[in-house]
Length: 55
Image (cartoon, rainbow, N blue to C red; front, top):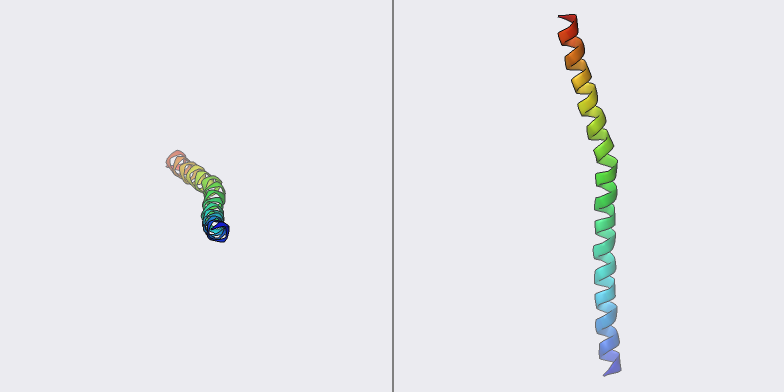
């Protein structure tokens, strides 16, 4: 009885750990990508503004 419960708990804990680690990786990726996108958008806008100023 107790063994079965422990096994079930262990499986759930490992599932949760895998799930949370995947989520952590996704969050990290988002945090890494956001500044990149912002920088790209900013430089893109600057380039357009620069071109329009030149023309």
